[in-house]
Structure formats: structure tokens, C-alpha cells
Length: 409
Image 1 (cartoon, rainbow, N blue to C red):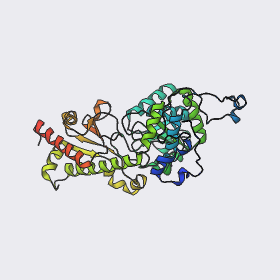
Image 2 (cartoon, helix red, strand yellow; image 1 turned 45 degrees about the vertical axis):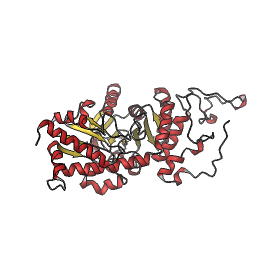
Image 3 (cartoon, one colour; image 1 turned 30 degrees about the vertical axis):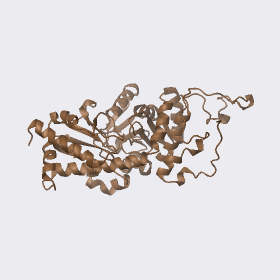
Image 4 (cartoon, rainbow, N blue to C red; image 1 turned 60 degrees about the horizontal axis):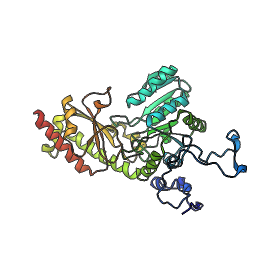
């Protein structure tokens, strides 16, 4: 059956709808076929108009039709649909990329700062900055540097919640610091996806996501995202992406739309699961008055400390506002000896021992497998949508098994 133009005049504007409704309907205006599920377009090139009088050379910028697809390195139907939905959820126009790090690289190409203030976090981000330091002489400053060390056009690179611990930083405070010097606040919000956190509400200038994680949510796609309300930056990012060539594939764009439909449901469940597991682990590892001493004893024998935003009790006066729907699905715990961190994942049944995060299945990683900078006793946990009590039982069995293997008391 041929394509039919759909009348969208009765479709409410995305901004008038709630988050979960926008995830389903923000792209309705792009529906030009009868398919309910958006079709997958694999073509890399697209026909020009058959009417010679309708052809507009690209040099005639004022009249050029930027909505028409020409070549998939510029735009393509599936990636465009993904961006349409995501822009609505992020509350700002966005540009997508082939991976999170390609998005970050694009941000620094566009901003070209002389100085970047950055803390710990994802080692890949530091790798991107090392390249810019070599090529451009970018000066790297600590995150807690004095505001006076920053100038106009410099960048504060804030990752919140933080990799691998899941701990959060006050976005508003860093926005005020950056803006007091004419600097830019870039927020890597990968661990706080839409639905849990809106960095623009607290003063972010540009927001980055590794879409591979929660936006994808199924361990089956790579993508990166930059969102900004600065129209000049947005136009520059779109043009420079054509030159950098770091565009999403059509399959990834299609998978991304599928994933965004359930984003709100997934991240709320994952975050709730994580907070319950963190509370259980923290109580067992630090307190002797546990209701179930038999269950708590193996945990206490193995765990040295637990880290997660939900444990930042002194910060709740701002953190509950910044993350009103949950404190994120990733946390970390440090065990007492390195051999414990090496062995524990192999004793689990429901947690896959793998890197990455954000998917519907729970993952655990001995973080030293992929990050040379962390304490070798650290394990990072990405909580999925399973029943949290089943996950707790799996962890409990693993702690008991570890104690029996090492004669730990």
C-alpha cells in the first residue's frame, strides 16, 4: 500500500503532554505511512524532487529545504525520528552521534575551550580531553578549582551521577560557578537519564549522554547525544557532524526510538531497585542491629563500603530536587580484599559480569577489567528491571559463597 500523508492537526503539541506520553507521541508528525511501528530505512541516499522547478541548490541557503533527506551522513529518517523524540524528552534540541565519546569529541571541537575543569568519572572522557590537550593545548583543571581560574569560553565538565560510584553533584552550584566567569557548564548526564534528571533546569548549557546506556537500554546499540538551547552551537554541531562523519546508523536510530518508548518505565524501576539494594547492603555492612544477622554477617565480612547518591544524606536538600524520581540505577561497592572483587561476579546467577550499564538486565563489573584508574577492590553494579528481592537473594548467596571460599569471618 502506498504512503499516505497523515493529518496531524489534532495531535497535541509534545510540550503539552507528560514525559511518558511524549516518549510515545513526540514523533507523530513524522508519520507519513500507515505503519504503527516506525519502519526501518536502510538507504544511504535519497532521490531529489522529480520536478526541475522544485530543485534548490544547496548554495541558495535561504531557500534550501533542510527537512528533505539527501544523504545519510547528513540526515536519515530513523535518526531524525530518534532526535525528535529525544529533543522532547531532554527539553532541548539535540544532535545524535555514533557513540557517547564521539558526541563528547564533537562538543569540544565546537566549544574549543582553553581550559576544562573536570573531576573523576569516566576514563574515556579523560581520553578525549587528552587528545584535545595534545592537538589544541587545552589546559586541564581540577573540578574543585577556584572560579578565578576560569575565563570566558572555558568549560566545567560535570559528570553527575558519577561513574562508577553513582554519586551526584549539585548542578546548580557548578552552573553558578561557571557563569560567574563567563564559562560553560557541560553536564555528562549519562547516569541520570531523562525522567530522573533535567540538567537544563539547573543551569546546564550543554548536556551529553552516552545513548548506549539508558536511552538504548537493551545492550544492543551504540549512540551519543548532545543537547543545547544555544542555536549557534546547535547549527555548528549539525554542520560539523557532517565533516566528522560520526553519525548514527539507521539501525541504531530505529532501535533508539523503540527504546525511548519505555524509558520512563525502565529507569524508574531500575532506580527503585538500586536504592533498595543499596539500603540493604549499606545496612548489612555498617550496622550490627540488622533484623537478619545470618543474612547480614556474610555481607559485613566482604563489603568495606557502598557508594550511591541515595546515601548522600547531607545533600538531600538539593538532591531530592535535582533527582525527584530516583537517584539512579548504578552504584558501586568496595570489598575488603582484591581477590574478593575478582571472584564475586562468578558466584552470581542473575548479574552478568560485563562492562557497560543501563540495560534491562543487571550487570556487575570488577571495574579493574576496563578502568586502570580505580581501586582494584571496586565492583560497579548496574541494576536492571528484575525483581529486586531476587537480585538481593543472588547477591546474598554470592557473599556466602565468597566467605566459604576464603574462610572469611
